[in-house]
Length: 115
Image 1: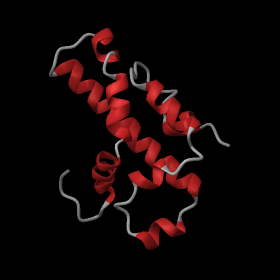
Image 2: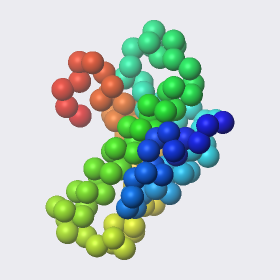
Image 3: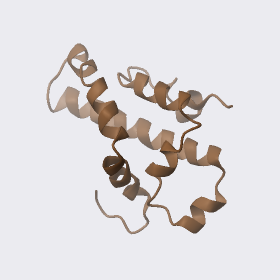
Image 4: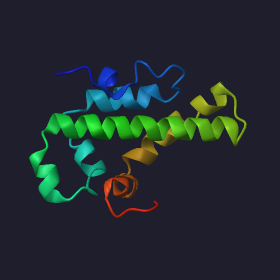
């Protein structure tokens, strides 16, 4: 099993407050959470990808999403780091929701213009 956190760029993402979320996902790599996220990719393409490739793409996408969320909480909401950390549990629950995962996965659809 490759070090998914290193491949996703999490270990190089200094200051990523939501790193525990990605650590939990890396531990759950045996589950099909990544396929749920990438449902927006046409089935014939997903079938050609290896499970590991799907996990890498999904993990990188989630890392970027979490970094953007963190930035918005810091800059727009003017929250301090401890206040942002308080959102970790809720954000983990949010991105674990099948409806949310499906919506985020739409970003991989070639025809997607916005989410």
